[in-house]
Length: 304
Ligand SMILES: C[S@@+](CC[C@H](N)C(=O)[O-])C[C@H]1O[C@@H](n2cnc3c(N)ncnc32)[C@H](O)[C@@H]1O
Ligand SMILES: [Zn+2]
Figure 1 (cartoon, rainbow, N blue to C red):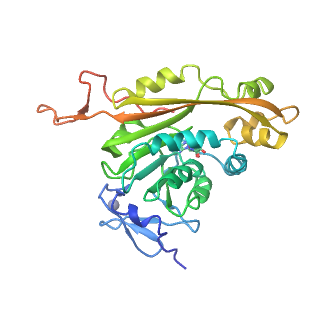
Figure 2 (tube, rainbow, N blue to C red; figure 1 turned 90 degrees about the vertical axis):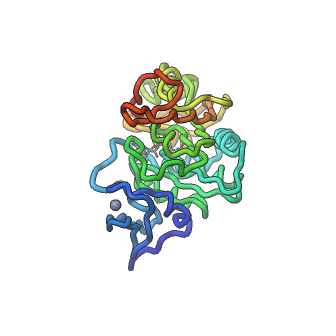
Figure 3 (cartoon, protein in one colour; figure 1 turned 60 degrees about the vertical axis):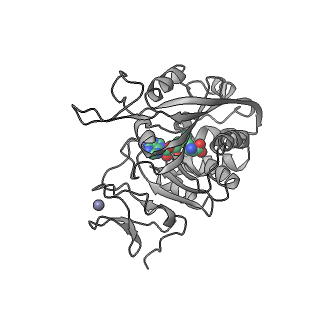
């Protein structure tokens, strides 16, 4: 029995681009989405469309990580982070805001944004099929598709008003391409203080790269300009189950030593809204476009 196109996916059909031939627009066809040239992408029983075909993503959460993330987020422990992301994402609401969530996981943050924007539609991209099962059901206006954030996105230019990236890999050049001229990028990432106490109890786990901020700034600078940053920092009392889930939702789970990990931890993250830099006109000699300011280094590779 073919799966029908989920209603939340329908508003995106014109904004999607065939991952194989890059033709704009996909249409529903018997349990799949299809491009004009006939390339076909299955809609999973759980409601997400499998746009990532043929090759595996370089990374993505496995089923135990997704289960741990879903349980942990359901405790409400990261609600202040969700509120901060939603505040920044909805600062300039349009009548029909299109939100793209890169590395959406279970869709927890997008559900928060959609609750604040009654007319918004949202697409979550993630390489983990398990995460997408949850993301496709996170909200009745939430659609989900499998994709590798490090590849050119299966979306037309200027498709989104907001790109959200919460604790997930980033692809600045593609974020820039798929945002409308006045679109905003929202990035939430941990500071070195994030979960420091838990790291102390479990040495060798939950590392935060001390150079992360500098790398992020360098990678985004050719494409985006920061307009507002919120620091979200608070203490959290974790019982053993929540502490286990918090570790198990990361690749650190392999090193897990459950004894003695309950207790107080600090949650510490930065949430920044960025304005898209304008694209400079095509160079007459090369015909290529570049982003301002002129004279910057060529497009840097995607970053985590
Ligand atoms: C730390 S989780 C964050 C998930 C979600 N944004 C949240 O905060 O709950 C990182 C997410 O990025 C996804 N991911 C990792 N590598 C990816 C890639 N190359 N392309 C797309 N998603 C990826 C993982 O599957 C996971 O869902
Ligand atoms: Zn095609």
